[in-house]
Amino acid sequence: MMRYFSFFQKFIKSKNKRFDEKGDNASQGFTIVELLIAIVIIGILAALVITAYGNLQQKARNTSRNTNAKEVAKLITAYITQEGSYPTSGCVGTGYVDWDNDGSLDCNVGTAPAHSPSASDAQLKKVTGGTLPKFDAPPVQGNNGYKYSGYYFVSGQTVDGTPGRAFFQYWLEGESQNCGGITGNMNAAGNTNTASAYAYNQAGATVCRIAVPTP
Image 1 (cartoon, rainbow, N blue to C red):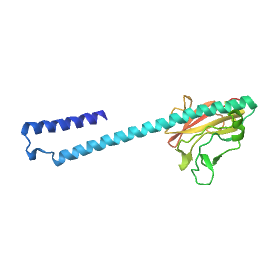
Image 2 (cartoon, helix red, strand yellow):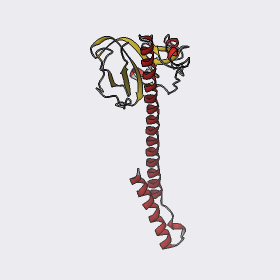
Image 3 (tube, rainbow, N blue to C red):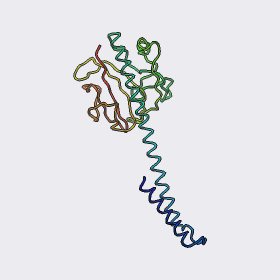
Image 4 (cartoon, rainbow, N blue to C red):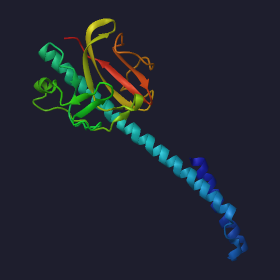
């Protein structure tokens, strides 16, 4: 971007210099070719600025999602510690929107939509004093045109080769994104035989999964 900007500055300075050397004759204005060059440069600069701004916005939204994920992990872990069992599978938190217009608030719009409020809300409120964290990040476009938003808890899974475990998952914009420091394969994986914390790419998005402690 700076290279184009520097070239544009030099171009304008050269025209000013020619203008100063030859006086204020009207014939010394910009030619059509020079104006076209200037327009193209301005267009390139504008495109670069818009792209950079979009990337910054995406990074900010993903950072917010990762921060919220840490809060979700603490909430679920606190419930497991206090109650000695997993909460019911479903959405975690509030602030979701009805993305598929079916009359229910969605935290996972896909082949098997999950809705908010979920059955686990009353359970999780036991460790929060009656309130739940609110998440309002926009949905992430995922596989087959589906939209994904929020944090979805699911139990009865095989994690690290151990059945009966549980994890929660969420989605980030863009592939191969940093899931809050999670390391592991970025390749597609199923719902079983997962690592304790891993991520994989899905049609332009990153799916982050975090296993929770056993009761």
